[in-house]
Length: 387
Image (cartoon, rainbow, N blue to C red; front, top):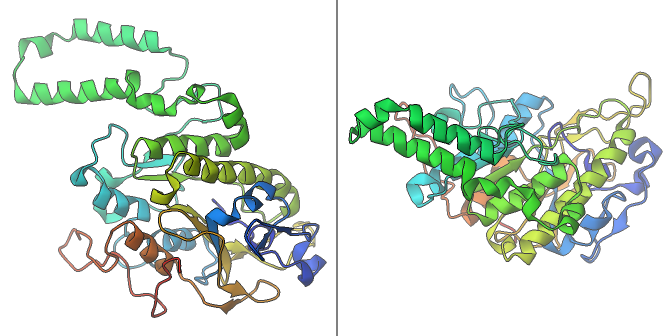
């Protein structure tokens, strides 16, 4: 959630805190998990709460986008001479091409644009960069970068390929040359992705209209549907970057737009993964880089805005070994401090690695041959693993 969603308006409501903290969103709703309430603009997620657990005591104390985004996605503070890889790149390293993955779709996908806050591959290098789709999955045709060319039909792509083949006299003259054969193999793979079955994973016209409607006909909702299709094809890590949460001004007007889209897309993803038998083997991780100030700034020019807040925020996890229907930790009565069981980014990341079969205490391949633990020491002694 690019920019940082407010915990009080999503998964840690505090109606008793009053107008200066809740604004107009002061009527949380019950969920299908006993005793668990969430924000009033998330009614569909309330019906799916038995599938996910809420961590209400996430903390790192950082208030800058760049530092917080790096910390939440790597478990580390910046400034350690090197940029460490994000969770997606680490999963790509240990679950990707060197470990049995054979798909033409890269194992680490970002929809639709990278955050741009840091290099997600870190010192692992370009091989582990995410493939950013570009385009808009909510458009009539999802123009995936390098796979679907805007304004060009599949027939035109095939005709271009045929023309290229006729003009490529060098390939014919040097048939059998190892370098030429390697290039031909790469070309074949590229066209298999563009014109073959692999690239059809991005074609949402193959899905029933009522399912697409349930996700929401918007970029985020349709991106969630693409994510399910990618996971179904064996892709190892998919990030959906949903911006619009950096609500310094007119926060509640923005929430009236953002939260219904989040509610439909996220809840449909959980249900759809479960319906396809994929939720038990797929971790779903919802988070921003931090939360937002619990106390609302009503003064001009903010007019009901919330600032950055890293002291305490919420995250949601589901599937892949995490239990559903639970709340982990708590914040105080105004959502300003961790009250119980602080969870740091490294704790959650380490738990996810453990569930994925990646040893969080192992070492990454460091470019200078130095020790590079997959996760750094935690600020607390123990990790939470969904218990």
